[in-house]
Length: 204
Image 1: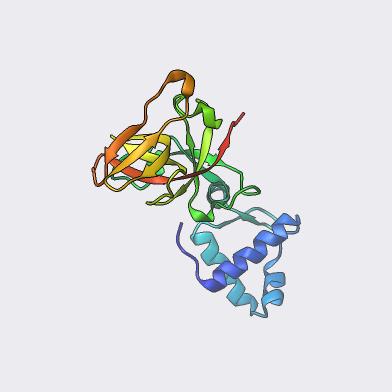
Image 2: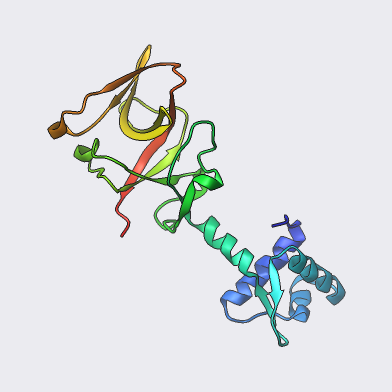
């Protein structure tokens, strides 16, 4: 959708607030609220329609948010659910995102955090089970001993990470299965730290 000017954003925000109160404004009311000439409001509203933010229904108070804009709001208010992470691609590339989960009351998605589905049982002793979703805050570095997500040989994996002088240790947490700590040489192009795990969820 085309970007809005500051004035167009203010008009759109006012219309949104009125629609939340189930009271769509007339153009005369918009003009009165902002101290603008009605002709200027007519032009601003037309720009919002042309850019795909508003649409008309019948009646005196016929302004409504467009379906495209409503879909955009739903996407941006939720936290992206990433189904995969691939080398060389941005983490939140559109093709990686399977959906959006509304957890904004618990977390602030403005830091770029995303949810990643866990595959495997290598971290069950940390309470991270196969099929769970971990909240990941993107960061290229991580403190020793933190649980994080790394991209290893084009596959995302959740492990406790230890960055040592010449190698990176990826420690699992499943004593019963006797998984071994994996060591990767620092600077090896097959490994990339994606971010640190800040939460774990079961989504029903």
